[in-house]
Length: 246
Image 1 (tube, helix red, strand yellow):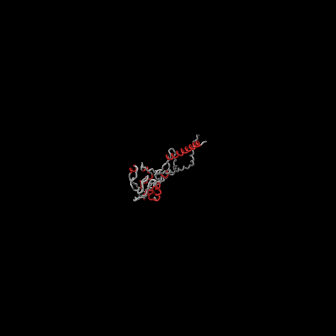
Image 2 (cartoon, helix red, strand yellow):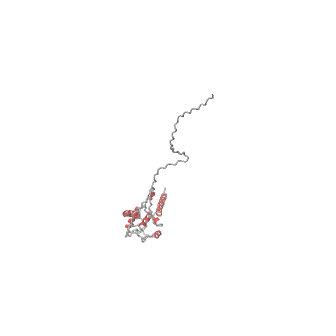
Image 3 (tube, one colour):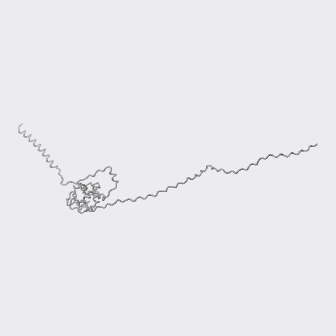
C-alpha cells in the first residue's frame, strides 16, 4: 500500500473523530442548562393526614392568644428558616422573591416599599395583626385568594405562634400581645324535679263476680219449745148394761 492510500485512511479517521466530538460540543452549547440567579418559590408540601386526623378535628381549638402567651421567639427563629429563601427579616434588608418582613407585625398590608405586591393583596386591605398573620401563615391562598405566594402554609398551631412572636421581635415597635381570656364556665344545669313515688295502698277486697253463688251466713235458729210429755190414757168408763127381758 502506497503512502497516498495511507494518508487517505488517516484523513478519514480524523474527519470522523472531528465530526463526533464537534457534534457533542455543539449539543452541549445549544442545550446547556443555565442556573437562575434567584431560586424560585420554595413550596412546602403539607404533611399527609394521619389516621387520627378526624379525632383531632373534634378536639376544641386553642385560641391563638393562648398559644402566643406560651410561644418561644427562639423556636420561631428556627421556623423562619423555612421562609428565608424568599424573605429577609433584618432592618433594612433587601426584598427578594418576597418582601422584607422587618416590622411586619402591626403594619398595613402591602406597605413594604419597592415590592410589587399582587392586586389581590392590595385589594385585601387591613393590617397584619396577630389574627391576620395566623390565618395567612396557616393557608395563604385561603386568606388572600389570588396571592402570588405559593407557600403551602404552616399547619401546626404552635409553630405559627412561635414564628409570629419572632416576627414581633423583628421590629421597632412591638404591638402588645392579645389578652388571654379565661374560658367561660358553663352554669350547672337545673335538675328536673323527681316525680314522687306513689303511696302504697292496701289491697281492696275484690268484688264477687256476677253469677257466682252467694254464700249466706247461717241464720240463728230459735230454740224450739219442748214437746209435751205423753200422758198415759185414762181408763174408759164402764158401759151401761142393757136390761134383759124376762
